[in-house]
Image 1 (cartoon, protein in one colour):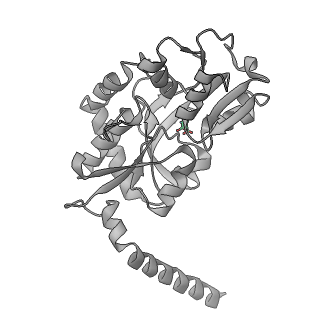
Image 2 (cartoon, helix red, strand yellow):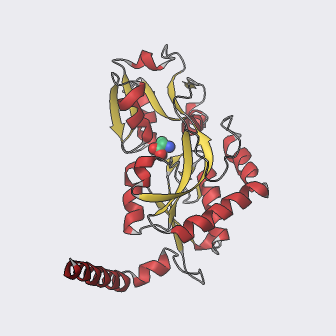
Image 3 (cartoon, helix red, strand yellow):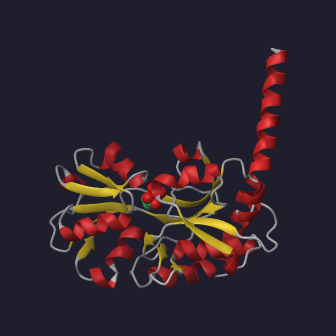
Length: 279
Ligand code: GLU
């Protein structure tokens, strides 16, 4: 028994030292030490207007982008030192485990299942799962989805909730991003798109879709957005929680909400309390 313990310790030490050697440069890049002149890599979505969007000119916009920029500043990084990386719904846990990014602000709901693999700071926004349909659609509640073509995204709580409880009899298609679902809704390939109301409102308000879609307004779930951090990186979680508290108390959170959700006419919930999850 004793021997076994020693072996395990020795192996762990070896792995740790190898990891340290292999990732020396990366650690600096992803911003795990104090900033200096280094960069910090931050995971966001690239295709969600109002939340995380890569604009045609290469700049980034959205509430998650503003939250990430504020948090990075509190960690010691100027906007010019932030390198945004796309983290799609299904990639988020792995991106953190691999150390591709220091943290993720990407409409990332805090769930018990995800907490097995990553740690979360926050929450910093409460959203709700909803349906987006064509303006003339007669789908208005979850039971209307039976046998209908419904689109959501792989690795999202939205897809999971449909399977588990909301509409197991819907014909669910899972794409890799919500922009693909919206294109499918417009072309008629799918009858409805489901995810957080915050995301759906952003798409519906885009000039190219104005007047074409409507939200059902169903509040099918509570989605507590957290900032994902590598499992065990408690120091970063604590720093991000302080940053989020400051963002609310100094008025920056409200400003970011108005700037990003105002155009979509999205009625957001009040700022959540750090560490309090609405089930
Ligand atoms: N907030 C939900 C989730 O984390 C849906 C949005 C998304 O896929 O990012 O799964």
